[in-house]
Length: 124
Length: 380
Image 1 (cartoon, chains in turn orange, brown):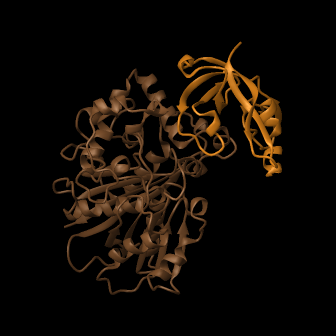
Image 2 (spheres, one colour; image 1 turned 60 degrees about the horizontal axis):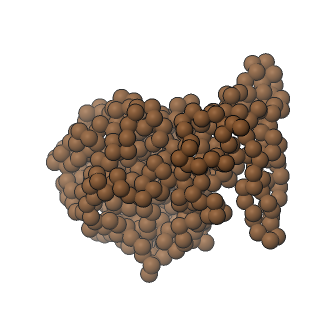
Image 3 (cartoon, rainbow over the protein chains, first blue to last red; image 1 turned 120 degrees about the vertical axis):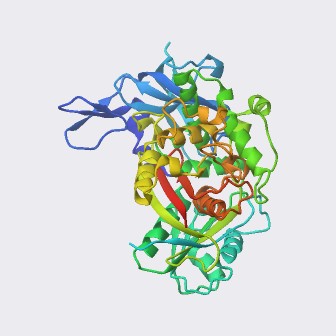
């Protein structure tokens, strides 16, 4: 089941919660657990820094293949690795503006979990 | 610290060894490295990345040692992803240089052909950040592809700029009887190959395969033949998650480990005669050459088009076929690189760089979260 492994990331995966430094205002994602950090939900807006189309997937992602993975520069500063969705690979461009959506990431089987998390799509 | 020498080498072919276990492969390579050696073995270090994930076997080192009749010897299994081999060489160099032991047998072994591609990709992805990268379906190949696209975008290059690296690797691999692929390719075939992780195509992606390599590291050089010394040995690390790097196209850990190893060895960039890199894709070699200062940012690809990477060039690389043609031994790669460079410095390599005296081996985990660099020197 690995319930706890996924449950403890729920705030980050469902509402893009990271942290913000109380003095400097620097935003971190994933959250920085240092002192003077407070929880902070990022806007989910960003731009595509780079991307690739995966034709040789790893276990658990076979059904989605081919799919697009990207590094996204979020407007608050941090970068994030995530899949792009609701877009064909030929339509993705470098610097494209994207926004976070919540999507099913994996189904771990009859006795397992449905794992949801962030993906990014072109801004509607 | 006392000087440390290469006292024996061995390797298996890189192939799909259906009939052999990891222990069998390790035994074959280690037996060659120990051939004719009559001294004592202070320790056996075994480098491996994926046995626990794919082979139902962790703690390989005691099994390898016992198979060699070395029951009772100190053993250590070293896992550092694709940098495991270089890390094992580093630990052996430290133990011998410090005078703790007089000789360490380092064996790198990888056994990946027992599972299908998806499980292998998932196992390779263990070297990246589990929660923030691998969970999202990113593969190591896709990470290199993202770096390649960023490089192409930053410097306005087409995919053809990358072709000379796999073309060179395959041209050299033809002559290596241990290589996985012994055929030549050309730039046209490179361009028309199917996508694996676009923009990376099939002819710019290495194949992981089974095999083992062994190096006997000793305080005493062999009684006959060339005297080859580990003159520089350094490991550096970086943030595991690629997206956390300040500049995606700067392999900082490559640069840090390179600078430390070169300073130890007391050699200059121009002194290095032959290179072996973690080069599963052209972009990996290009960014490594840039990080090491052999090309300015954005110009590493010119080392390919100018011919500098070929055996008669100024920065020859992948002489035994590199990861692309010889095959990618992952956690064993760093040990195999030392075997191949030793042959270069002995003058006995299948594709020989003329009068090679200084060799550089660089191996990394994933896209460079751990990097080991070694400088071998043939003493006069």
